[in-house]
Image (cartoon, rainbow, N blue to C red):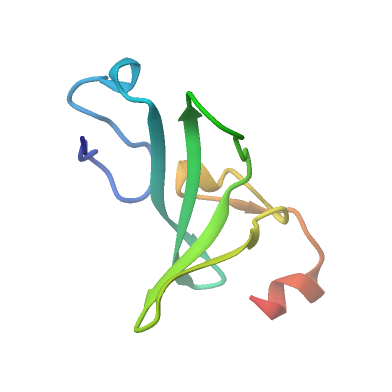
Length: 94
């Protein structure tokens, strides 16, 4: 089951909430950082198995999906307008 949400950056809204029916809820989100658009993925709900609570950047390329390290230097990624909380050295590596 896939539910499209309104709003690419900033607050997102869904026409209906069906998360109570799903075994797993995965949120894929665009966010802006360092003057470019990035994509983040997180698992909001998982009924079975281990649950990872980190938010990670992902990229889709010719080799498939690449998952990055957890986005620990940012706060507010799921809002689409994150605030950088890390060091400037880490910001330059992105």
